[in-house]
Length: 207
Image 1 (cartoon, rainbow, N blue to C red):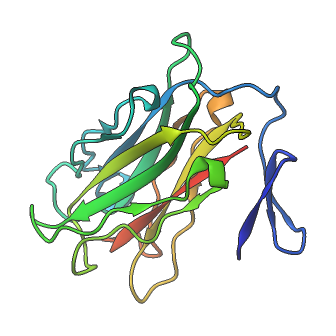
Image 2: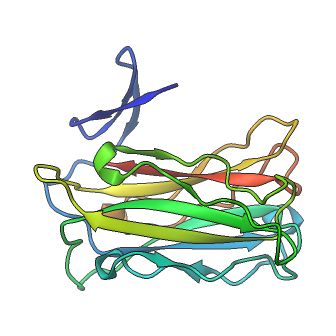
């Protein structure tokens, strides 16, 4: 279903169906932030890898190191992290989008898939997967920035992640808190059988 941008602190679908609501807040810029990803095995209950982060948005475009589960082989789950820095000043007049890339065995590098820009209302990436679209081992994140277009104001944001496996229904997206609520990690996203997804979709919601 196509999502359209709404100035009423949420997202609406074509036909006016209300989908999500951000917390009530003043029209102010969100805090500066970075984005992290953590992988796990055993259906998200073990084999936890090291969380890896991009740089902070106010410092320009950045890429995280590669993240995997504890043995860097066929993770079962991933969580996304919206990591704001409070007391360090607001996000400057920066537009941004979130990307991801996967690889398998240190090779089989997939293409980078991006969300739409925040100034375009956000949205979700295509499936982030490796070159053969089968059981990637590692993922990394991209935080791309550019000047915010004139007349556009961003007040808040949150992120989501969803697991995808060929031949199965897509998993259920898990969400971070809104930046105004402190951000933080989502729950682990799993595919339908909680085992070896072929990729993930990342979502960006803004108000």
